Length: 432
Ligand SMILES: *Cc1c(COP(=O)(O)O)cnc(C)c1O
Image (cartoon, rainbow, N blue to C red; front, side, top):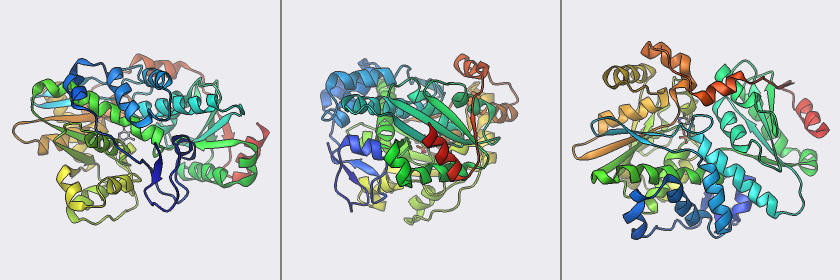
């Protein structure tokens, strides 16, 4: 299977190259050259299969030509060491809980898969050089990537984060791991971290001396595996025999785009809802047909604070830029912080279910837009304990911390202090 760039001005590349490069040379995003429809006999039995079995079948459709079947199956099963249950919240509204992975957010699936796929390619390579993954984080990405790659032989991960600007719960998830994970606490903000990483990728001397790669969320190995849980969500609701609507709290639009790809593979989803916080760029695009990126606005659902969603290019590519097609399959929604908080409160008071601020956008959009005869499933993208102080403050009840999160908090923090100057970061890497 080849991968083309959404900008279509460079030649197609192999899966391996798409994974190692992350972004195409013309700065487009990679897309698979074909999206095969899965056969009816798969959909007929899907509700009898485990999440892992479903995912193996879906993974074969994307990666089956490039990864040996046994290895691919092992990668998928090892990635999915947890389930994604659909939980009924109230009549016709279900939460697909994607937070049962090691760092309690859906990004675990893509990060774990990418780590294992990269390891597979490294093992096939005889030169045996360590691959260095550089990742800048404002909190969540760093923990998912660090935990996804933890203990994976042949790979070393450097997580750059702004000192004093991530929550203690987030910080402990990538500073206490040790082994092949190094946390670098930068004296600066998130933009400084991102600049250091970008400068490293552009630096000729560094790239001649070490193999560098990014584990950015646009990487096909992080993006495509997200299709797995749409199939699983459908499988769990199939018995209802009704029209299924999936609502996705969206920021960079990688997650929902994987859902659209599942739909293209024949998954019988009636329609999608993209739920935004106050960052309403996609919502406005659906209404007006015009895409106008803006500076991002900070909100309660901060993993969705994106003013120019990268994966918009993939959505356009999937539907040849046809606004009428896109807006008939996807509807939008945009919520202020006060609406998000209200929804969390109402849902908790009425049902006892604790939403996180991201999932709350999904819940709200379904409440507003679900029609008679439809069953709604929103993706609960993070565990509320990840945003414990915010959530407790809003619903007025302490949120329990799951055991695996508590374990991180017991670990000892280890981080390398770094200035925001690239020359310092570069000499540090060269000395390693
Ligand atoms: C990353 C993230 C999102 C947004 O997902 P996209 O793929 O960027 O649209 C939503 N919720 C949480 C908790 C996240 O970490």
